[in-house]
Image 1: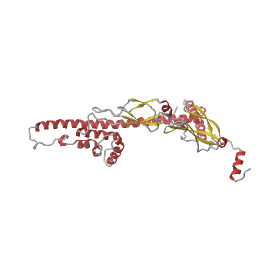
Image 2: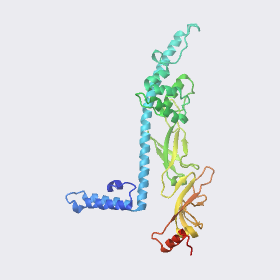
Image 3: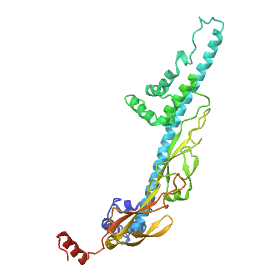
Image 4: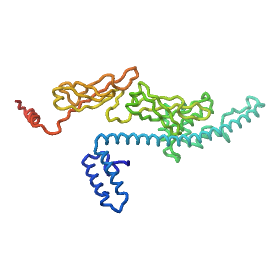
Length: 374
């Protein structure tokens, strides 16, 4: 079925009455009796009815919103990964061009050195690795990638993924006034790697840059320590086994699953855990939070209530005089922590009034407001 909000022409935050009115208007417009010459009227009428069935039920609407959000998140991740892969592909092609030209320059220098062996030490000229007509690696990078890239290569000696964010920002700033678009941090790492390699300041083989991705998981995945599959931009499937100590925001490092370049060690894959929105629980560290609606009488007098937990329903005791700012903590029902234990389930109490006004309660509140006690 297509998006029910679009079918009814309402916004995603529309109130139930607005949804109902929109459905009636749409149904009246596309009703088969009003469109006897349209063979698709029956199917369109049924589709609008199905959309209304989804949105009029709070639970079905909540499940649809959750599924739609997860689908949108996955599509955004895939698009971002695809765009990053295209940028990396261009950067790699340019890097290989530099490598090829520098290799030719090295061969030329080697021949020059062989011819100069007969000369005395005082007459010999120092031989630097350079390109055609004395072009240095930095000059060659500037010619191919642009001035901003060459400057970034000079100021990015480590090539570590920890500096990716700073390098990318610097590259954007320096390239903002030029004709070339700003380079991604991955390309900057590659350029810096080339300079270091041909200067002889790094061991061989060098490690390729790391890749960062976002791994969307569910609360159930973390509770059961499931293994999830990450779809990479180069069509690889990488499996990530969730472990104890992982929660929202945790970054898992998968050795050798990052960028793969010829002549270099494979980089790592940095998977940042993002917990998908759950209709029952909210993740805070290793604790799970849930809300429980309680009546006014239970809030004042206390009582017992049933609450949903990751391990089934549990009965809890509500202390007397409990307001909406109070919680009940159930130990050991949260996520697996990094100390071998588990976080807690925190039940947040929410006081709700009865559906219809109660005259006795209203009269009591009026007396209390005006200081009149019976």
